Amino acid sequence: MSTYHKNIIAVIFSAKRSKEDEAGYAKAAAAMVKLAQKQKGFVDIDNVRDQDGYGITISYWQSEADAIAWRDNETHVQIRDKGRAIWYDAYSLHVAKIERSYDWTHDE
Image 1 (cartoon, helix red, strand yellow):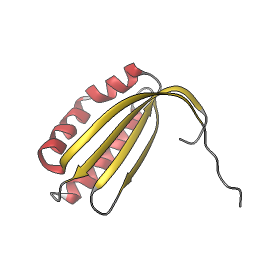
Image 2 (tube, one colour):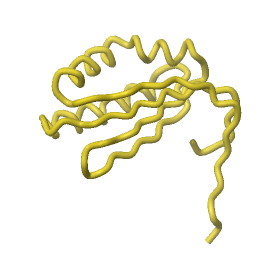
Image 3 (cartoon, helix red, strand yellow):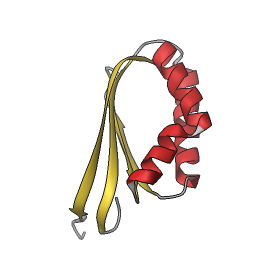
């Protein structure tokens, strides 16, 4: 997150990717980021993935209702189902309320 935020919702998705359909996964992941950015209440997104396929994506939302609306978005549901069928071996999802956050950057 690039600015100070208070009382936002974090949806924390950690997953182990399968070896299946890497190109399809990459295309779907990029589309989901673009779609999330258009959703009401979207704040930001962070994601990382290691070379073994383990990754973490955290999306931030203005409210619990906004996070639920993202969960229930029809296109997101379809991609989630495809992920379960093809792209993931396992995943965990956690929802948390962030009381406050801030960033720091070393000045060069």
